[in-house]
Structures are given as structure tokens and as C-alpha cells.
Amino acid sequence: MTLFRLNLYFLSVFHATPDAVFTEIAQSFIAGFRFDLLIFGFLFIPLYFVILLQTLTEKWPRSMFAAYKVYFVGVWFLICTLTFIDYFHFARHGVRMRFNDYMAWTPDVLLEQARGLQQNQVWIFCIITVMLFSLGYMLTKSIKFGEWKDEYSPHPGSKLETVLRILLPLIVIVLAARGTVEPHHLALEHSEVSTIKAINEMALNAVWCFDK
Image (cartoon, rainbow, N blue to C red; front, side, top):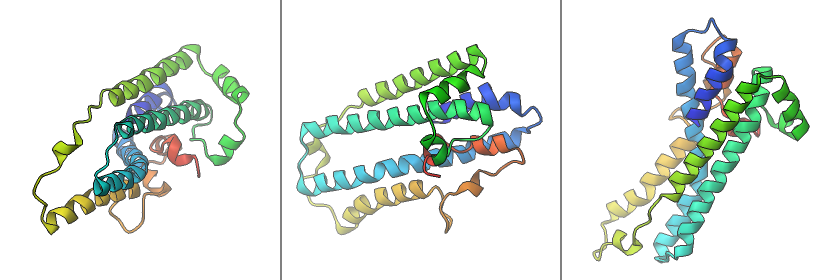
């Protein structure tokens, strides 16, 4: 998702913000990484409970390993699709798409937005989208699951070890889904690192903006 943001910057934001300072751009990418991490935090929540249930029942059918890969590929496909649609809206209006924009979206809108851009710009982003989806697919396909019995010790763990194995992953996932350790979760104001709106909008991502 950061690679998508990098391409968005060079293909659109860079030319529209010649007066932007480097520190603000860097802050936008750092904030953007936090928003991306938030999305993946939410995506790992259902997996945590499924794996916890399998751990307690000690049932690890091979079909579940395939289901995990299908889940990751499906999620990445949706992320790539939303990011692709959002790019043309951003290039035209300088802001991310929101829920109302998606509700009014049609393929004709996409074609009209694409016609307003330089042809090479459109082709470059299309190729980049295919490449990044393919990268995610190949990385997911290459995941190797070991024999689940190798993960179990014949000796029961201590209560402290058991608590840590259950709570530590949950804490990491919750912190990622919140996007911050502050009392309030990650919100729009965390993307406001510049006086230039396009720089602030670049810090967001299409998935986070979908229900806003």
C-alpha cells in the first residue's frame, strides 16, 4: 500500500505541489504507513480468533491453510481495486474518494476521469496496479505452512507462557487496528501534516476512506 502511495505521489501529487517541502512529504508517508497498518490490523482480527479456536481444539485441516491464502489474496484484490478506482478520482480532484463518491461511481465515471489524464499516466498506473497485485499474489502463494504438530511441545507451558501467547498477538493486532497508542484512535486529523490538502489526502488510503 505504501508502494501505491509512492506512485500516487510521483504520478499526481508531485506535479500538483511544486512548493511542498520534503519534511511534510515524509510526514505524509509516515502517517500513511500508520493508516495502512490500521487496515491490516483489522484484517487480522478474524484470523486471530480462528487460529485461537484451532489452537484450543488442536484441529488444523489442510483446507484451512488454503483458506488463509484465499483470504489474503481476496483482501489484497479488494485493496488493489479500491486503490485503482480511487487513483483516478484523486488525480482529477486532489482528494480521496469517500463513501458518497463510491455510491455515485460507475465505470463511465472512471473512463471520463481517465480521459482527463495523460495517456502515459493512465497506462503507468494500470501496469503498476497489475504488478503490485501480482506481487501480493506471489508472496501469498509462496507462504509455506509447516506441520502444525511441530508447533506443540509435549510438555505443557507455564501459565505465564500461555497468557503471553494469547494476549501478546492480540495486543499487537489491537494497537495496529487503532493505529496509535494514544487514547483516541487514528483519525483524519492525524493525516493533516501540511497546509497543502493533496499532501494530507495522500496520507490516507482508499480502504480507510471507503466508509467516511
